[in-house]
Image (cartoon, rainbow, N blue to C red; front, top):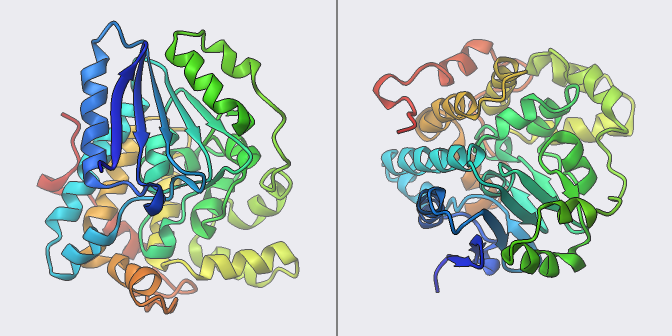
Length: 343
């Protein structure tokens, strides 16, 4: 069975992720299929909108499929990962800049590579089960697939908090941070998709909106900004260590699980991208890091500890309390001939 279903139903270009047992993890085949479909429908007058959804209740998509990335990287083949990320980021840019409405329905986990498929469209729908997160620092990567742009422009310093702690957002938090637009009860989704396929005005989405459950981000915004605003990683760790609040202690534990090199680079990227909504600028920065992540970063060690050996004891190259900015700067330096382009 294919990992993805691409078809035209009524006036809608339809993309459905069909790997529910793998939590719809995004494969290279899915990346190329999505981009090809967007290209085919761009000038097709019979397709007036694109609808993206996924099979299964647990996840829209819990991330990218990292098994092959790990296998190739461990064998010393860094080219496959560079090709995967390059083509994935080009697909993310195509989604973000698409000239027709793109409506996505994001149940369950929407994380990492799944966020890159579901959270760049014009109408991003979340529901009761939605949990959105960018947990890449925990495996030695930076928040990518355009996520750095959304995080950099989230209210206050909430983007730095979400990127470093990998915190999960419920529907309300996702809307607050800029990853989603509208909360609609999942009981209505099937009927809404059918109506959209049959040409209904997109205003029906707003008309169907419900009141989302209370989130945590806005409630903790003052505490988040006090710790994360304009600080380096060692300064953030010191501020959290000095906190006597439950939020501060929990956040410290979450931050210390991440790869220091990735977290320092994440902060540097956000400082550069603040106020910038150009997804290509974000993807270019992200690619500079990910293209180097296997050979010069902590990605392979992060996957080993989290997925392969599952010992949850990664041996990172740096310490969060002492990492120097120059290490992150080197990971984000221009790539020369390898620099990401958008043909």
